[in-house]
Length: 173
Image (cartoon, rainbow, N blue to C red; front, side):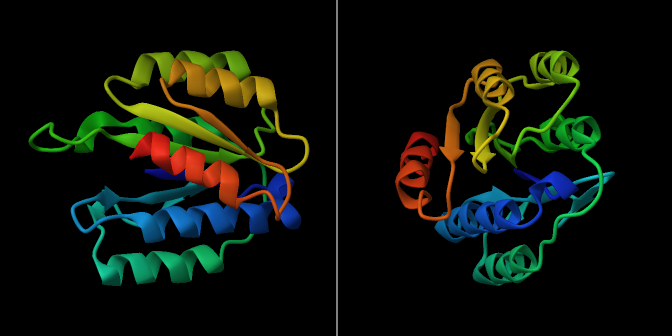
């Protein structure tokens, strides 16, 4: 599950920096993978009601939608994070590891509540964080990844995407 911040703080360069890793990640999915994308600002929006098979058509549709993402509004992370970590649509056979990739600049004021939410909802999933921009909230991003048994990846400039993402994708795969 890709959880993507599209709040106003992600405007300009940051939203462009968020689109690129998201598109790269979706294009790397294998046919046996399932995925969903949840965007959030004042509320949240899901591309699908539950994760879908990574078919060529689903990937192409996701890429079209990713390219249209715009930043606007406030930052209400908790409801979107709750939905992303919801265990109601776990894999049927338990053979897959469910992973949440959280892409944000980390502009939050309720860190303690979000850390508590991650600890309470994570279960067997993993949470990876991707910090966007020149000044993401590194403390939040690192701690969220630590509590989520994942890793933190920083993307500080548009030219700084490939290396960090390859490391992230290798860790996830």
